Image (cartoon, rainbow, N blue to C red; front, side, top):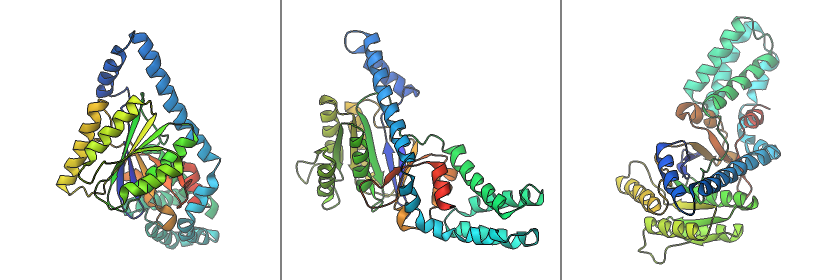
Length: 347
C-alpha cells in the first residue's frame, strides 16, 4: 500500500493486491493455483501476471526519466526558495562557516525539510568542513545534494509501482478531505491506460456531493469504465465489492477505488474503511492490503515552496515515494525519481 500525501498535509492511502512474499499472499496463491486443470499451468499464469505488473512498473519509471522537465518545473517554487543556497556558497570561506551553515539550516527549515533532517544535514556538513573534506562552496553544495539523495534512497529505494502478482490489482485511495485523491486517481488511470492497461474505476466516495460525477469526468477523459452507486443510500463497501466483482469477471488489469475523505480520528469512517477492505477481500482474498503502507504519493507540490517535505516524510516513515503531483494537467502525476528530484530543487 502506498500513501498519497499533499504538500498541504493531506494524506491518502494507495493499496495494492498482495505480493507472494507475505504469508497471506502465499495462502492466497495456493488457493489460486488449485483452480483449473493443473497447478503448473496456474503457476505459469501467475508468473505471467507477475511479469506484466513488473514490466509495467519499470516502464512507467523509465518514461519518467525522459520527462524530467515536468518534475523540474513542478518544483520551481521550492527551487526558488532554496536559491539562497547558491548565494551563500558562492563566496564561502572557512571563517564564515558558522554563519553560512546557520543560514543554510534556515533555508532548509523554510523549505519544510523539518528540524530533524535540517540539523542532521548541516551537522554532517560542518563535520566534513572542519575535517578538511570540503574546501569550496561547490563541494559543499555537492555534499548537500548527496546527503539529501542518501536520505531518500536509504529508506525509500523501491520507488517503482508494485501491483502484486495477480490480476486484477486493486488500488484504493484513502485520505483526508481535499488531499487530491480523486484527481490523483484519475491521473493514475490516464498513465496506466497509456501503457495499455485495462482500468476500471470505482466511485467509492458516497459522502461528498458530486464526487461520483467528478470521477465520471475522469472516466470519460481516460476512456475507462466506471462503477457508481445505484442510489444515494448505497454505501462504499457495496460499490467497491460490485466493482471488484466486475473487474474479476471481465478481465480487468487494475481496479482504482476512490473513497470518501476522512481523518484517522473519526472512528465511524475508519470502521467504514475496514468494511471496504472486507468487502473487497470477499471477492479477491487478501486484496487490498490496507494495513501496511508501501509507498507515498505526494500531491500539490507545484503550488508550494515546501518540497522538502518529500525528504522529511521518507526519513520519518521509511516509506518510498511512488508519485508526485507537480501540476493540474492530466500528465502531471509523475513517477518519483530521487536523483531528478534533488537536481530539480538544487539546480
